[in-house]
Image (cartoon, rainbow, N blue to C red):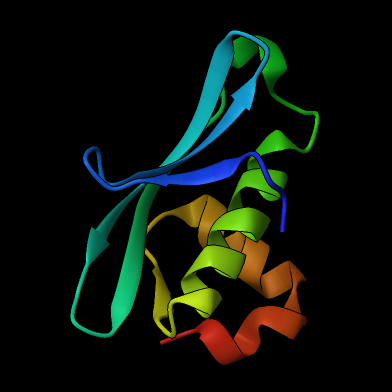
Length: 91
């Protein structure tokens, strides 16, 4: 797992620090799943694979917690389509 991905439970988001900037993925919890509702990378850092790294790390945290994931935003849906190895996480 990318060591720099963290679950900021107080803000309900996964975070990845890139220098002084923060990429994040907002989520909502259900009893058995995490719904990722929005993914955002600072504009100056887009196109570098940072959001993919963030979601990969978030999925590893979700897997570790024994939960499933629901793609509530287009980026996460596209990521899951491109990564069939994570199909076991999809609720």
